[in-house]
Length: 171
Image 1 (cartoon, rainbow, N blue to C red):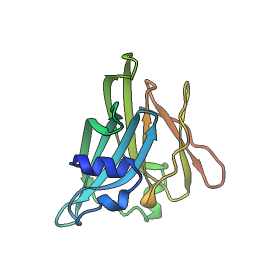
Image 2: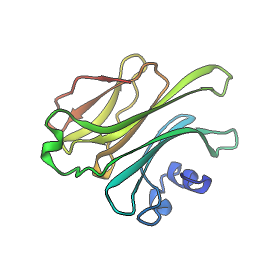
Image 3: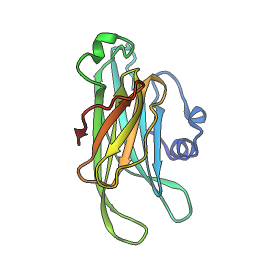
């Protein structure tokens, strides 16, 4: 799991400062929306056959620091993301959803959702759609993305490099 120093570095945009050894978690995607943020971290097994991902929701405290509000993770077989056959049926793989209830700065209850995964090489942006749809998220290197939202449910789609939009996926 990412420590407090790693969260601060990633949310400040200094992901490289946080990178560790090959088997330690590395922050590979970050998203911020006001007082909310999300991190996608990835690490490989020692034998290289599996990946473990953690999606972490963070909130900005009154003093400006980012605090871990909740997280979830999964382990899955290592995926050759550059294999064109992987993307024949869609644009995203290995996605996970983390959802929690908390309060905004004014004390109003809200549901916060982070959706993470990897997208096909021809995806330009991942976009939340629907009421209060968020800003476009540009995938990080290797296609990693994380979307943070207070919509419930959350719907996301991909905009491909050719401008075509995929059908939304509901989370």
